[in-house]
Image (cartoon, rainbow, N blue to C red; front, side, top):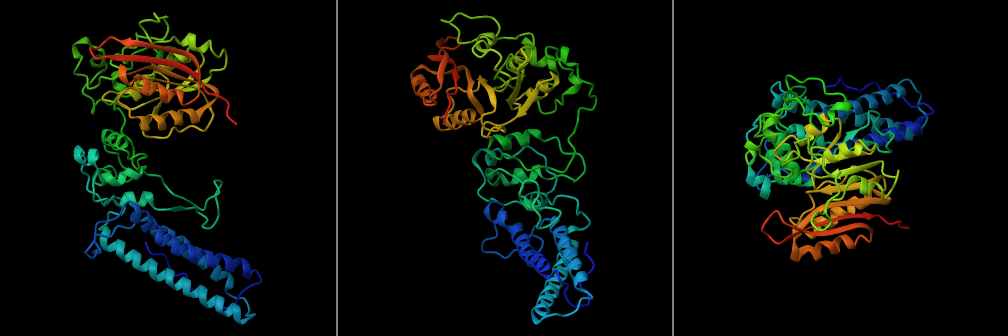
Length: 472
């Protein structure tokens, strides 16, 4: 992996010295930056637990991309030396400059040789494999729920991912205005080191393990975003082409188009059968997979039901509601009804014990695989409507509710609609939650509070359609 030496016989400098001098100085600075960048993030989050003990050579983890970065610097210094070769001497300053450049080239060659020796002695011919053994057993629940106090990561592939990614032309800014990309990873991943290592334990350019359930547990616990991976996702072995859009909205998806390995149900009929109630592996939105139940279309008794109809809401803004978000445990029924009314809705949900996202996609709708702790991936003031049902409930603390509501406010356009659909909580806590909605200072277009009668507890339903105000 070592590059040939870039050292060449030294002569003197052409007229374009100032430009080359800047490049050389930047190259030496960048060399130091690259070397330090590989431990910077590690020092903050991916810190090895080596207090009181020296780190042996076998314990040290360095990203393999470092060799490529050093090789790029070697090539660029070599180009400068070629330009120097054959020029005539003009000043003592130029002599000093040439000596410094040769010193940088020598240092690069020595460092590349040492780094190549390090990898050769530790890789044992497995340079394309993460340093973590492939252990895909169930994650340690205590670590996910409580966090680990070690903050120690052993995955070489994780270090490869988090290392700074300079542009191909080092020192040149890309169209984003930066000279390098810093890959994103959730801060709380550091509390779940062994499971993140397990998630990153795969063979590059091979099949990814079937471990989306581990990934989802990490996301829900705050390890979000997860690091990207360099492996191929598994597919259903007998996948058939999806139905055309004019029939897919209300047709039951084929069993062969869903991977059932991590669900209690192993076919679609199990998701809707009365005989499997309580055994399906999910309880939120228990009737979601019965696509014959449309909802939101028949007016209800205002004294007993908190459900508004879609047409009732759309009449508030004729022709203005075009795009929006449904943040709910859903298989896309709300989005399907809105699509029939020429409104495009993204459905944000997790796979809470059943294939929610797969069914949304197979219906020809847009699934947004998103945890509750994530910032919405939409720009400010862009959506016409945000709808949520069976999600905002009395389980939610006020701090979390405030962050969620303000993020929804951020993405809603001025005069856009926030549709809170059947929020429920204990009756004596209702005022506390209603006060939080009132603090948004939205205009109340529809508002309804009714008793929740499906359980013995003293609970209430609350629904509202609120209009975001203009703000200067």
